[in-house]
Length: 601
Image 1 (tube, rainbow, N blue to C red):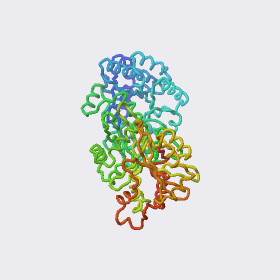
Image 2 (image 1 turned 45 degrees about the vertical axis):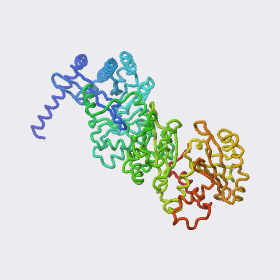
Image 3 (image 1 turned 90 degrees about the vertical axis):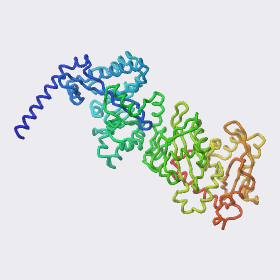
Image 4 (image 1 turned 60 degrees about the vertical axis):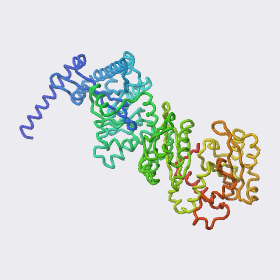
């Protein structure tokens, strides 16, 4: 090392030594005179792009050294076990700010404050926090505490106890800088955090490998019920990627650096970023539980099954926000698979579908809106429709509600583009229309006395679950069928005579007109048709009577069979055709192509 370099090192060491001494001597005065300021860095919700929180960060405006960033004084206070003085000071300043906002009628946002392991060794942190929060009458849900991963590996038993006490008292505890250390997974095993703050140094090069790591962290966090926040976000590309994988919140220079409170709010206002209300916070936190990377995103509320620990980007997913007051909706999230599926159906972007439904130019637009409304009130819905020759199946599930707004998870399956169906395109080109005509399709296993729901777009029909034919039919007859029609209904579903009646019918099927009660308490006519598709297997199809007459098969054959497809078909649709399609449908459902563990609720 040259002489000049050695002198530079010695000078730097002297400067550090002098600064350390200066910090220790002046700390009390700096706190009393408020030379140490609390700056705020915004946290923004990815779905709504609204301000959903802030992190409180200390900045020391020193008369001699000027503005001191945290890396110049935090380690000094930790070294001399004085960090608790700074952290408790920051908590008090945050609570003061909340009190001022409340007095001025300003909507405050939750704020997170950093805690050190040394804080817990120096004082009773929970007691001190409760005293400050009580003094300023601050709701516990607006104060969050961040603990850095690196401090958790020492004195683990004590840290677990301290963190648990804070959570049991009503405070959220977050893990800061997840991924910056070497024990991240062990830490998650030992601590029950409310939220992970992911270190975006993983994305410094934005390579495919680093993106996969971030996606895996988000996927894992959602599986174990922990909310996700990415810190250090600096670009639109990073922000869009985090939105696509379901990361809930973003913090970083993309939205703004740490600034004094008023300046921070002004800059956010200039960018058009509004504040999230408490009701919106709860609404979006529920949405945040959905794992869009999962092979089974509809089961977000249930404990993960071993078979579900698979990642999938093939399921076409969207999050729809439905407003019951105006019977309108918008897409607040759409994954790449959904965008691709919609493009194959002829829509350049998701908004084009929304506009088509609003304009009633979309196939089954009215049914789509009604399905959203039923999902809002009843929790889930499945319905099918035909769009330009493509047979589509839609699954909906209620995720969260706030006032008239409801967030609904949507999946789209274009069954007609399934590779298996391509092999029998001519056959299925006709049969998909058959399913489009009928609202409900059941397969009766006469030999086993078992009823299997193949498809339904009717909530009333959804009450017929898989199970005993006798039990389901008896219960449905008692609860839903019009009194005068009940004997006819029970006779129709008499499995002891059903096959015989069908075989003796010259038409090849039997039918019945039955009045059943709908969700509004009104009775309406429905037509039931039953075919033998295989010995001791009967396919039952149900639809509204208003357009279904006794000659429905002639209409079906005339309206939906292309001229070149008529050759080779018998007078009635053959049982072989129906059975092959029933088998194929069952395969789609139970192979997971429509969705693993499908529930026809």
